[in-house]
Length: 353
Image 1: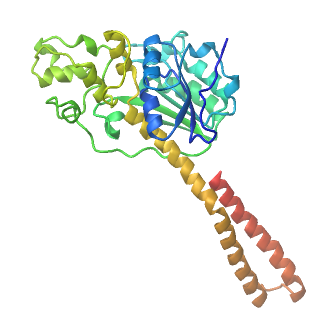
Image 2 (image 1 turned 90 degrees about the horizontal axis):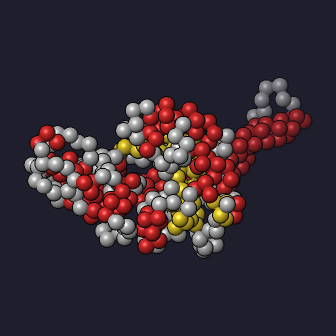
Image 3 (image 1 turned 90 degrees about the vertical axis):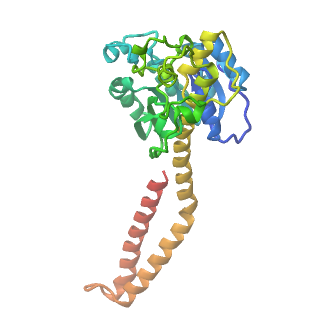
């Protein structure tokens, strides 16, 4: 088994990320935009790994199952994984029944193994929404053994700044509750690439390099982005360029996709839209920053609690409760004030945890 050696980062890197099934770097770009830094991006496809390297990410060209993660145990803030989704794709009519049996393409067990070994503070998973039943039945119970909070979101990229209708499942597990991101105004295909289609594009697929036939029967079949192009151009013979597909996925212009034509289109079609990944990453970051704000306020809250309790002590001594003799007042005050302060501190600590 190959030992995974982490990419060298500054001692106080903002957030240290290990990414599995990294593809060409869509999620990596989003995580980087949110201020996170990668120690490694694991990807077994040679072309996609070459793209990661060309883009400046610490690519490890290997199968997730073939690596030894011992050196990373206890050092990772966020583990992001996008396990293979083909077993649960719409094309698989028996996705839920057969997905778990598809040993070669069901990456969830491999991912959970790495989570147990590495023990990240946060684990974020992305997949197609058809995997939800399997995830709720098999993955979430395991995550609840390891993390205090586990949530599932189904997000449409079109609601979060991506000019494309692309619905994805996200599982976020960590020590804190995370609030889902708010929807944003939608961007159209025209906004992104100038095509006369005033809605978000249908999902960018791996086979966009083939284009679509000019037969008008295709014009109402919105299965992928090229179908919208056929409608917008009334069947003119043209396919979406790689650059257009990348723009619909929110990759930056000139991103260095590597490999032959089919490989590059496949990398774009399989990617997590960087803008969507950044939205999810910022939600996690917001949870951390909110907890940090509470932690920073603890001394002030403690001082306030002491002032309130001191005032309560004065009031009790001035007007002792019925049945309490003068000789018992101090004992009464100390006992009940101590309990009240312990309760206040306990509430504050739980909120900051």
